[in-house]
Length: 262
Image 1 (cartoon, one colour):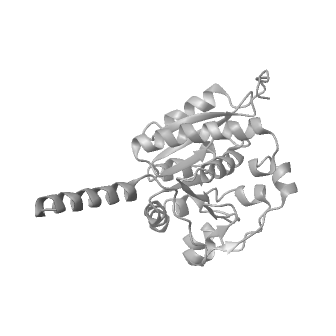
Image 2: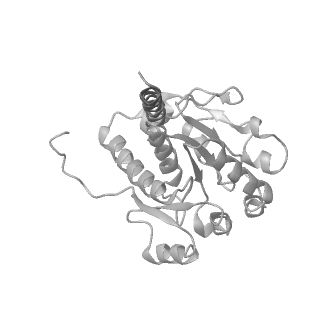
């Protein structure tokens, strides 16, 4: 084999190696050495309609469809951070944030950081039955480090940051330089990571309006038969300069006929 042939063969070998290494691969496992590991109670998950505790495939598949649509729009726009909120209380934003995060984490190409950023009425850990020791509020008040606040609920590719309730000053904490630094740190830590923030309702204060300018997009949750059209319009007006990834109609009373699969 002459020099030119050998050179061509070496080039082909290198190109083949590059192609093999660049093929799509699952996200690398996250190391949880500095995260507090906890176990979740199946009865609590089932009672609070968390998808890993449910046997109803229709509900699981519904969140799978939501995951697909959310990931599509986030990929198209190169978004990494997503806030989940609702015009008013009791629309089910926390359950939506939890189930969407779990569903995204079940996709092998992504990992998820779920942050309970509703400092007025934290709902993530309550829904999951987790006792909070240190949370986002402690970090923002410089009472703890980042390593203190991460929780791994033994769901693959999912890490959480809980929160304790703050009595006063929630809006100021969420717009503080330390919070903005936390968002940027979370965004850049892992390339494949989606960061989901469970936010307060829009109408309870200026928390969401202030924080949303530092997030890539918001997902709005409205409650069927409860969220009024004027509330929804007012929420959209307040968020007119914010990217809206979509709207979730929750607690729908529309009865769907079972398909041939169910």
